[in-house]
Length: 223
Ligand code: DX5
Ligand code: ZN
Image (cartoon, rainbow, N blue to C red; front, side, top):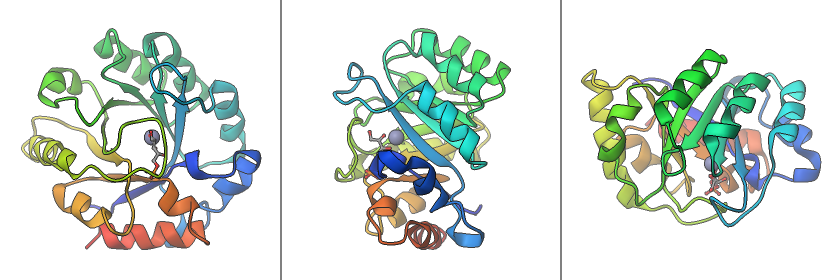
């Protein structure tokens, strides 16, 4: 198995000191995050509002950790490209919101980013298999998108297992990422189902030492 990737979500960080909050997971060795997960919400696709491109542009100047931008927004066909052009490592759009997800993936890649496709808990994986051939990551939501600190929906692990099988048999070539309710109690079942990259918000930023939380989650995921 490969080394599991841990992506702390700054949704659970202190928004007044985001630079310092990212530094808390940007140390050396096992306490260093692999990606920083940035939740962009527009109060339309989800019932919550967070931050947008200006904040991401500022964060990119303050960290060399790869930014994993999760766009929970309507009309990503219009807005996603800006995040790729700004220098985000990974730009993930929602399958439920994208008008032309294949074109979107091509445009994101042409702008130098990895392209991610996310599906909500109730969205079947089967509906998007052809589209996923054009993507670098599949983000399986394990809570309804919109808020941090919700409980893990274990049913989605079936989709993770299917995706894992398709990757391992060469039918898809992407990283499987999971987002929502990942913590010390749930990460092992997600790892066992075949997740490559684990987003964790409250489990990292709700901990006394976010760096230590990153190391502990990675260790658990590697079992
Ligand atoms: C929820 C966001 C998640 C959120 C996860 O819509 O997409 O990234 O930050 O938070 P936890 O890990 O607390 O469930
Ligand atoms: Zn997210």
